[in-house]
Image (cartoon, rainbow, N blue to C red; front, side, top):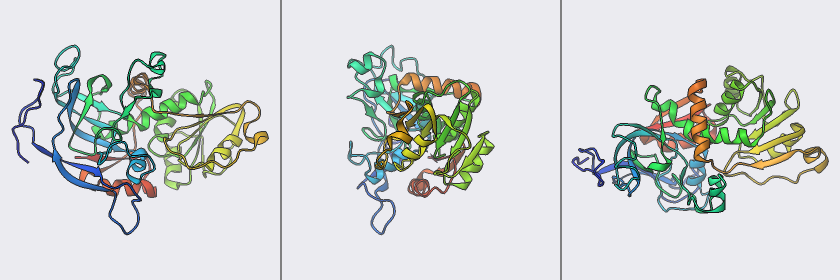
Length: 359
Protein backbone atom coordinates (compact mmCIF):
# COMPACT_ATOMS: atom_id res chain seq x y z
CA UNK A 1 0.00 0.00 0.00
CA UNK A 2 1.13 3.53 -0.72
CA UNK A 3 1.57 5.78 2.30
CA UNK A 4 1.62 9.49 2.79
CA UNK A 5 -2.04 10.50 2.60
CA UNK A 6 -3.47 12.90 5.17
CA UNK A 7 -7.29 13.22 5.40
CA UNK A 8 -8.68 16.66 4.72
CA UNK A 9 -9.92 18.73 7.64
CA UNK A 10 -6.80 19.22 9.70
CA UNK A 11 -7.54 16.44 12.19
CA UNK A 12 -5.74 13.75 10.27
CA UNK A 13 -2.77 11.60 11.09
CA UNK A 14 -0.07 11.37 8.46
CA UNK A 15 1.28 8.29 6.73
CA UNK A 16 -2.09 6.70 6.03
CA UNK A 17 -2.36 4.37 3.03
CA UNK A 18 -4.05 5.43 -0.19
CA UNK A 19 -5.93 2.13 -0.46
CA UNK A 20 -7.31 -0.49 1.92
CA UNK A 21 -8.82 -3.96 1.87
CA UNK A 22 -12.58 -4.22 2.24
CA UNK A 23 -15.40 -6.70 1.66
CA UNK A 24 -18.10 -5.49 -0.71
CA UNK A 25 -21.53 -6.99 -1.43
CA UNK A 26 -21.35 -7.41 -5.19
CA UNK A 27 -24.55 -9.31 -5.94
CA UNK A 28 -26.81 -10.14 -2.97
CA UNK A 29 -27.77 -13.80 -2.90
CA UNK A 30 -27.35 -17.08 -1.00
CA UNK A 31 -23.95 -17.78 0.53
CA UNK A 32 -24.39 -21.48 -0.20
CA UNK A 33 -24.59 -22.94 -3.67
CA UNK A 34 -22.44 -23.30 -6.72
CA UNK A 35 -22.44 -19.71 -7.93
CA UNK A 36 -20.16 -16.82 -7.07
CA UNK A 37 -20.42 -15.65 -3.45
CA UNK A 38 -22.29 -12.39 -2.89
CA UNK A 39 -19.23 -10.68 -1.36
CA UNK A 40 -15.70 -10.14 -2.57
CA UNK A 41 -12.55 -8.88 -0.87
CA UNK A 42 -11.12 -5.97 -2.87
CA UNK A 43 -8.71 -3.08 -2.60
CA UNK A 44 -10.49 0.27 -2.58
CA UNK A 45 -9.45 3.87 -1.95
CA UNK A 46 -9.23 4.95 1.67
CA UNK A 47 -12.60 6.53 2.60
CA UNK A 48 -12.69 10.31 2.75
CA UNK A 49 -14.57 11.57 5.81
CA UNK A 50 -17.20 14.20 5.09
CA UNK A 51 -17.48 17.36 7.17
CA UNK A 52 -18.58 16.29 10.65
CA UNK A 53 -17.20 12.76 10.28
CA UNK A 54 -14.30 10.93 11.87
CA UNK A 55 -11.92 8.64 10.03
CA UNK A 56 -11.32 5.45 12.02
CA UNK A 57 -8.68 2.75 11.70
CA UNK A 58 -10.60 -0.48 12.35
CA UNK A 59 -9.29 -2.72 15.14
CA UNK A 60 -12.20 -5.20 15.08
CA UNK A 61 -15.65 -5.58 13.57
CA UNK A 62 -18.33 -7.93 14.85
CA UNK A 63 -20.20 -10.20 12.45
CA UNK A 64 -23.94 -9.65 12.86
CA UNK A 65 -26.90 -11.55 11.43
CA UNK A 66 -28.00 -8.28 9.81
CA UNK A 67 -24.80 -8.43 7.73
CA UNK A 68 -25.98 -11.83 6.55
CA UNK A 69 -29.38 -10.38 5.61
CA UNK A 70 -27.64 -7.59 3.63
CA UNK A 71 -25.35 -10.05 1.84
CA UNK A 72 -28.08 -12.55 0.98
CA UNK A 73 -30.65 -9.98 -0.14
CA UNK A 74 -33.15 -10.48 2.70
CA UNK A 75 -32.97 -6.69 3.07
CA UNK A 76 -33.39 -4.40 0.04
CA UNK A 77 -30.26 -2.85 -1.41
CA UNK A 78 -29.72 0.65 -0.04
CA UNK A 79 -26.18 1.16 -1.35
CA UNK A 80 -24.73 -0.79 -4.23
CA UNK A 81 -21.48 -2.58 -3.45
CA UNK A 82 -21.78 -1.65 0.22
CA UNK A 83 -19.14 -2.65 2.75
CA UNK A 84 -21.04 -4.45 5.55
CA UNK A 85 -20.32 -4.28 9.26
CA UNK A 86 -21.71 -2.12 12.05
CA UNK A 87 -20.03 -3.39 15.21
CA UNK A 88 -16.81 -1.48 14.70
CA UNK A 89 -14.09 -0.72 17.23
CA UNK A 90 -11.19 1.44 16.16
CA UNK A 91 -8.99 4.46 16.70
CA UNK A 92 -9.59 7.98 15.45
CA UNK A 93 -6.99 8.91 12.83
CA UNK A 94 -8.57 12.04 11.34
CA UNK A 95 -11.71 13.93 10.40
CA UNK A 96 -13.37 15.67 7.49
CA UNK A 97 -13.37 19.12 9.03
CA UNK A 98 -16.34 21.17 10.14
CA UNK A 99 -17.08 18.99 13.15
CA UNK A 100 -19.24 20.96 15.58
CA UNK A 101 -17.33 22.23 18.57
CA UNK A 102 -13.87 21.96 17.09
CA UNK A 103 -11.74 19.98 14.72
CA UNK A 104 -12.65 16.66 16.33
CA UNK A 105 -15.62 17.72 18.52
CA UNK A 106 -13.86 16.57 21.66
CA UNK A 107 -12.23 13.59 19.99
CA UNK A 108 -8.47 13.30 19.78
CA UNK A 109 -6.37 11.33 17.36
CA UNK A 110 -5.83 7.90 18.88
CA UNK A 111 -9.08 7.83 20.89
CA UNK A 112 -10.91 4.49 21.03
CA UNK A 113 -14.21 4.82 19.15
CA UNK A 114 -17.23 2.64 18.45
CA UNK A 115 -19.32 2.68 15.27
CA UNK A 116 -22.79 1.16 15.51
CA UNK A 117 -25.82 0.52 13.28
CA UNK A 118 -27.55 3.90 13.68
CA UNK A 119 -25.58 6.46 11.66
CA UNK A 120 -27.88 9.42 10.97
CA UNK A 121 -31.28 10.80 11.94
CA UNK A 122 -32.90 14.06 10.91
CA UNK A 123 -33.41 15.43 14.43
CA UNK A 124 -36.56 17.29 13.34
CA UNK A 125 -39.32 14.77 12.62
CA UNK A 126 -41.99 13.97 15.20
CA UNK A 127 -40.23 10.76 16.19
CA UNK A 128 -36.85 12.42 16.74
CA UNK A 129 -38.45 15.26 18.68
CA UNK A 130 -40.17 12.87 21.09
CA UNK A 131 -36.99 10.87 21.71
CA UNK A 132 -37.73 7.98 19.34
CA UNK A 133 -34.97 8.67 16.82
CA UNK A 134 -34.80 4.95 16.04
CA UNK A 135 -38.09 5.44 14.12
CA UNK A 136 -36.85 8.44 12.09
CA UNK A 137 -38.03 8.01 8.47
CA UNK A 138 -34.77 9.57 7.32
CA UNK A 139 -32.50 7.33 9.37
CA UNK A 140 -29.39 5.89 7.76
CA UNK A 141 -27.47 2.85 8.90
CA UNK A 142 -23.86 1.69 8.87
CA UNK A 143 -23.17 -1.25 6.58
CA UNK A 144 -26.45 -0.74 4.70
CA UNK A 145 -26.75 2.92 3.67
CA UNK A 146 -23.04 3.67 4.14
CA UNK A 147 -19.90 1.58 4.11
CA UNK A 148 -19.15 -0.23 7.35
CA UNK A 149 -16.40 -2.05 9.15
CA UNK A 150 -15.57 -5.13 7.06
CA UNK A 151 -12.54 -3.08 6.11
CA UNK A 152 -9.31 -1.60 7.42
CA UNK A 153 -10.75 1.92 7.75
CA UNK A 154 -14.23 3.38 8.13
CA UNK A 155 -15.93 6.71 8.75
CA UNK A 156 -18.60 7.74 11.26
CA UNK A 157 -20.46 11.00 11.99
CA UNK A 158 -18.91 12.32 15.21
CA UNK A 159 -22.38 12.81 16.71
CA UNK A 160 -23.11 9.07 16.32
CA UNK A 161 -19.77 7.71 17.55
CA UNK A 162 -19.45 6.02 20.94
CA UNK A 163 -16.59 6.45 23.37
CA UNK A 164 -15.11 3.11 24.42
CA UNK A 165 -12.68 2.13 27.18
CA UNK A 166 -9.03 1.51 26.39
CA UNK A 167 -8.60 -1.32 28.89
CA UNK A 168 -10.86 -3.87 27.13
CA UNK A 169 -9.79 -5.79 24.04
CA UNK A 170 -11.30 -4.57 20.78
CA UNK A 171 -12.51 -8.08 19.94
CA UNK A 172 -14.50 -8.19 23.18
CA UNK A 173 -16.02 -4.74 22.66
CA UNK A 174 -17.13 -5.14 19.04
CA UNK A 175 -20.28 -7.29 19.60
CA UNK A 176 -21.51 -4.86 22.25
CA UNK A 177 -22.09 -2.23 19.55
CA UNK A 178 -25.05 -3.97 17.94
CA UNK A 179 -25.68 -7.35 19.50
CA UNK A 180 -25.44 -5.78 22.93
CA UNK A 181 -27.28 -2.55 22.21
CA UNK A 182 -30.12 -4.26 20.33
CA UNK A 183 -30.41 -6.90 23.03
CA UNK A 184 -30.73 -4.12 25.60
CA UNK A 185 -33.38 -2.35 23.51
CA UNK A 186 -35.27 -5.63 23.11
CA UNK A 187 -35.13 -6.23 26.85
CA UNK A 188 -36.63 -2.79 27.45
CA UNK A 189 -39.35 -3.45 24.88
CA UNK A 190 -40.18 -6.75 26.59
CA UNK A 191 -41.05 -4.83 29.78
CA UNK A 192 -39.55 -7.45 32.08
CA UNK A 193 -40.72 -6.75 35.64
CA UNK A 194 -38.21 -6.59 38.47
CA UNK A 195 -37.17 -10.11 39.42
CA UNK A 196 -39.21 -11.47 36.51
CA UNK A 197 -38.99 -14.64 34.43
CA UNK A 198 -37.47 -14.05 30.98
CA UNK A 199 -37.40 -16.39 27.99
CA UNK A 200 -34.78 -15.96 25.26
CA UNK A 201 -35.49 -17.71 21.95
CA UNK A 202 -32.26 -18.18 20.05
CA UNK A 203 -28.94 -17.69 21.83
CA UNK A 204 -26.40 -16.10 19.53
CA UNK A 205 -24.39 -12.90 19.71
CA UNK A 206 -27.21 -10.66 20.95
CA UNK A 207 -29.03 -13.05 23.27
CA UNK A 208 -25.97 -14.08 25.26
CA UNK A 209 -25.31 -10.41 26.08
CA UNK A 210 -28.97 -9.70 26.85
CA UNK A 211 -28.95 -12.64 29.25
CA UNK A 212 -26.05 -11.20 31.21
CA UNK A 213 -27.81 -7.85 31.62
CA UNK A 214 -31.04 -9.53 32.75
CA UNK A 215 -29.30 -11.85 35.20
CA UNK A 216 -27.32 -8.94 36.65
CA UNK A 217 -30.67 -7.18 37.26
CA UNK A 218 -32.03 -10.19 39.18
CA UNK A 219 -34.13 -11.88 36.49
CA UNK A 220 -34.60 -15.63 36.09
CA UNK A 221 -33.59 -16.47 32.53
CA UNK A 222 -34.73 -19.48 30.51
CA UNK A 223 -33.05 -20.07 27.14
CA UNK A 224 -34.76 -21.88 24.26
CA UNK A 225 -32.42 -22.71 21.37
CA UNK A 226 -31.72 -25.62 19.04
CA UNK A 227 -27.94 -25.46 19.44
CA UNK A 228 -26.37 -27.67 22.12
CA UNK A 229 -23.24 -25.49 22.45
CA UNK A 230 -25.42 -22.41 22.91
CA UNK A 231 -27.42 -24.24 25.59
CA UNK A 232 -24.19 -25.00 27.45
CA UNK A 233 -23.06 -21.39 27.16
CA UNK A 234 -26.42 -20.20 28.51
CA UNK A 235 -26.06 -22.38 31.61
CA UNK A 236 -22.45 -21.27 32.08
CA UNK A 237 -23.63 -17.64 32.04
CA UNK A 238 -26.20 -18.31 34.76
CA UNK A 239 -29.42 -19.19 32.93
CA UNK A 240 -31.86 -21.18 35.07
CA UNK A 241 -32.58 -23.59 32.22
CA UNK A 242 -31.71 -24.22 28.58
CA UNK A 243 -33.91 -26.28 26.27
CA UNK A 244 -34.88 -26.71 22.65
CA UNK A 245 -36.34 -23.83 20.67
CA UNK A 246 -39.80 -25.39 20.51
CA UNK A 247 -39.79 -26.72 24.06
CA UNK A 248 -41.95 -25.23 26.80
CA UNK A 249 -39.93 -23.45 29.52
CA UNK A 250 -40.16 -24.95 33.01
CA UNK A 251 -42.37 -22.08 34.22
CA UNK A 252 -44.58 -19.40 32.63
CA UNK A 253 -42.70 -16.34 31.42
CA UNK A 254 -43.29 -12.70 32.32
CA UNK A 255 -41.46 -11.59 29.18
CA UNK A 256 -39.67 -13.09 26.21
CA UNK A 257 -37.39 -11.93 23.42
CA UNK A 258 -37.25 -13.69 20.07
CA UNK A 259 -33.76 -13.40 18.60
CA UNK A 260 -34.00 -16.25 16.08
CA UNK A 261 -35.38 -14.93 12.75
CA UNK A 262 -37.96 -17.73 12.67
CA UNK A 263 -41.60 -16.69 12.46
CA UNK A 264 -42.78 -20.16 13.50
CA UNK A 265 -41.47 -19.41 17.00
CA UNK A 266 -43.79 -16.43 17.55
CA UNK A 267 -46.84 -18.51 18.59
CA UNK A 268 -44.57 -20.87 20.56
CA UNK A 269 -43.20 -17.97 22.60
CA UNK A 270 -46.64 -16.38 23.05
CA UNK A 271 -48.01 -19.64 24.47
CA UNK A 272 -45.14 -19.68 26.98
CA UNK A 273 -46.08 -16.25 28.36
CA UNK A 274 -47.99 -15.84 31.59
CA UNK A 275 -50.94 -13.43 31.78
CA UNK A 276 -49.92 -9.90 30.80
CA UNK A 277 -46.62 -11.12 29.34
CA UNK A 278 -44.81 -9.37 26.50
CA UNK A 279 -42.95 -10.89 23.54
CA UNK A 280 -40.43 -8.61 21.78
CA UNK A 281 -39.13 -9.63 18.34
CA UNK A 282 -35.56 -8.37 18.13
CA UNK A 283 -34.57 -9.02 14.51
CA UNK A 284 -34.66 -6.69 11.52
CA UNK A 285 -35.85 -9.66 9.44
CA UNK A 286 -38.29 -12.45 10.36
CA UNK A 287 -39.70 -15.25 8.28
CA UNK A 288 -43.49 -15.27 7.97
CA UNK A 289 -45.44 -16.01 11.12
CA UNK A 290 -48.25 -18.60 11.08
CA UNK A 291 -51.80 -17.57 12.04
CA UNK A 292 -52.20 -16.88 15.75
CA UNK A 293 -54.80 -18.58 17.94
CA UNK A 294 -56.32 -15.78 19.95
CA UNK A 295 -57.43 -17.76 22.99
CA UNK A 296 -54.12 -19.51 23.68
CA UNK A 297 -51.61 -17.05 22.25
CA UNK A 298 -52.90 -13.48 22.72
CA UNK A 299 -55.71 -13.50 25.27
CA UNK A 300 -55.12 -12.38 28.88
CA UNK A 301 -53.54 -9.14 27.65
CA UNK A 302 -50.42 -10.67 26.21
CA UNK A 303 -48.53 -8.33 23.87
CA UNK A 304 -46.44 -8.81 20.73
CA UNK A 305 -43.94 -6.04 19.99
CA UNK A 306 -41.24 -5.42 17.43
CA UNK A 307 -37.85 -3.80 17.97
CA UNK A 308 -36.52 -1.23 15.49
CA UNK A 309 -32.86 -0.28 15.74
CA UNK A 310 -31.99 1.79 18.83
CA UNK A 311 -31.50 5.32 20.02
CA UNK A 312 -28.12 6.73 20.96
CA UNK A 313 -29.38 6.92 24.53
CA UNK A 314 -29.95 3.14 24.38
CA UNK A 315 -26.38 2.68 23.22
CA UNK A 316 -24.86 4.88 25.90
CA UNK A 317 -26.99 3.29 28.64
CA UNK A 318 -26.09 -0.25 27.59
CA UNK A 319 -22.37 0.44 27.25
CA UNK A 320 -22.39 1.97 30.73
CA UNK A 321 -24.18 -1.12 32.11
CA UNK A 322 -21.79 -3.43 30.29
CA UNK A 323 -18.76 -1.76 31.85
CA UNK A 324 -20.28 -1.64 35.37
CA UNK A 325 -21.49 -5.26 35.36
CA UNK A 326 -18.62 -6.77 33.40
CA UNK A 327 -20.80 -7.91 30.48
CA UNK A 328 -18.50 -9.74 28.08
CA UNK A 329 -19.05 -11.26 24.68
CA UNK A 330 -18.04 -14.82 23.91
CA UNK A 331 -16.06 -14.24 20.73
CA UNK A 332 -14.50 -16.13 17.86
CA UNK A 333 -11.94 -14.00 15.97
CA UNK A 334 -11.47 -14.37 12.21
CA UNK A 335 -8.85 -12.58 10.10
CA UNK A 336 -10.42 -9.96 7.83
CA UNK A 337 -9.70 -12.08 4.76
CA UNK A 338 -11.94 -14.83 6.21
CA UNK A 339 -15.03 -12.63 6.31
CA UNK A 340 -16.92 -14.93 3.95
CA UNK A 341 -16.16 -17.93 6.15
CA UNK A 342 -17.36 -16.05 9.23
CA UNK A 343 -20.70 -15.30 7.59
CA UNK A 344 -21.08 -18.89 6.42
CA UNK A 345 -20.29 -20.17 9.91
CA UNK A 346 -22.82 -17.75 11.38
CA UNK A 347 -25.52 -18.98 9.02
CA UNK A 348 -24.72 -22.61 9.80
CA UNK A 349 -24.62 -22.02 13.57
CA UNK A 350 -21.05 -23.29 13.86
CA UNK A 351 -20.15 -21.18 16.89
CA UNK A 352 -21.70 -19.88 20.06
CA UNK A 353 -21.47 -16.21 20.96
CA UNK A 354 -20.21 -13.87 18.23
CA UNK A 355 -17.70 -13.87 15.39
CA UNK A 356 -15.37 -10.87 15.05
CA UNK A 357 -13.27 -9.84 12.05
CA UNK A 358 -9.78 -8.54 12.83
CA UNK A 359 -7.90 -6.60 10.11
